[in-house]
Length: 87
Image: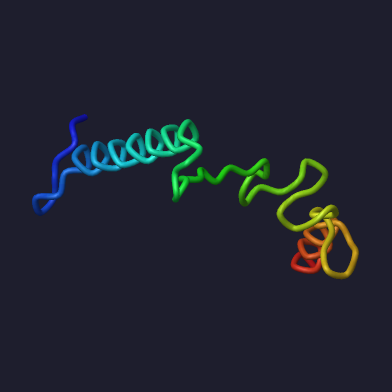
């Protein structure tokens, strides 16, 4: 499948532009690291955190993501709800 630009917009041009800007910023940062007398050193921000992800010990809902607000398990709540519908 080939990309068809809409209203003159071409995603390949945008991607190329962003890649060139990124490469330029990286090159600038590398050059400023070599030149210690640079007045404005470029800094590349890097973090060891994983952004929006959660720790491996829990889910997005916390460590007990399988529990409801009442403290019951989700599956038990579903079973009870189905049983109430049948009755």
